[in-house]
Length: 79
Image 1 (spheres, rainbow, N blue to C red):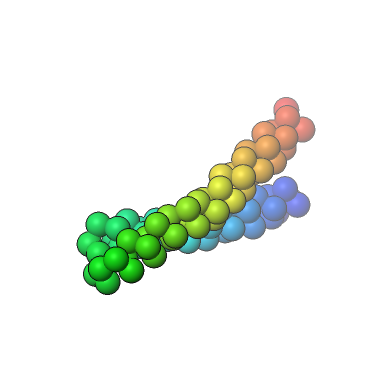
Image 2 (image 1 turned 45 degrees about the horizontal axis):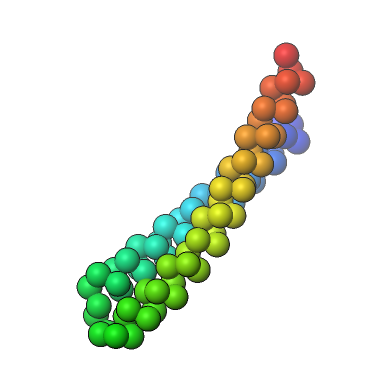
């Protein structure tokens, strides 16, 4: 495997972890906001967790963009 392929594999693993973390946090936040298992505390926790969940999702988006640039840059060199 070339260096670019190894970098893409590492970035793909990072992307999956970040997406999983962000989506799970969003799921928990929505669950807290909708079901309110702890009353008012659930609403407060959900309201705090919702914007915090955007951080790993934004990092995943940037990782996907970096992967695309690497893949496109690599295909330009091969052509």
